[in-house]
Image 1 (tube, chains in turn red, orange):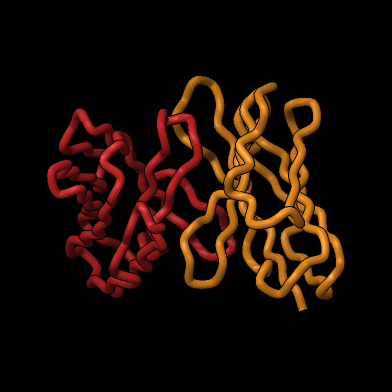
Image 2 (cartoon, rainbow over the protein chains, first blue to last red; image 1 turned 45 degrees about the horizontal axis):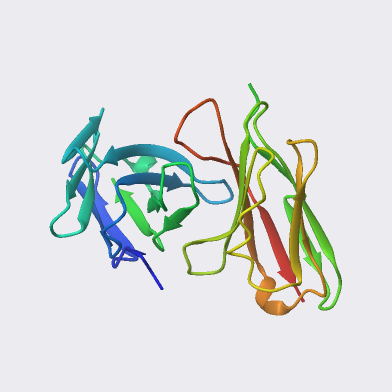
Length: 113
Length: 113
């Protein structure tokens, strides 16, 4: 059962524009969400997180929005740069933030010049 | 400070053979996780160690899979009688210092012929 879903396997954006990556979840008990970025042949690296007590968290050019009623979150990257090209995973922990993570299948972002 | 390391980086084996994959977590991290990523899939949880507590083995796909963590540090994931469907990238992550973030190693790419 896919409790965290990323329905777009790929996204292509021109350099300088905004990239919007989407994530949906089914488990209403999730109260903390993370985004990871993965380059080929490397492990995922933590990018940004958000707690369910917030609806927005910003870190530099990365902003994550959370819509609890819709069980939806999105990652905005602006401005997008070729170095941002990677696979982005949405994840949520079961129970406390200390437990295992449920991951989406990822979205391959390609930023072209 | 060193990150999470994994060895080998690549492993090719024949069907039916046993393999051992190693993970060295970040020093001092008390939590250690194993995930795997099959082609086109998200990260699938396998097992979670937290300090001296009994591990959460709920993600192990069959009894051919086992893992141990010696001395609260290094962990070894063992797959017995490997099958072609075991081919995947096996990722290890650790967490500690009171933080919520899991830090991933580069993974071991396992190919079962």
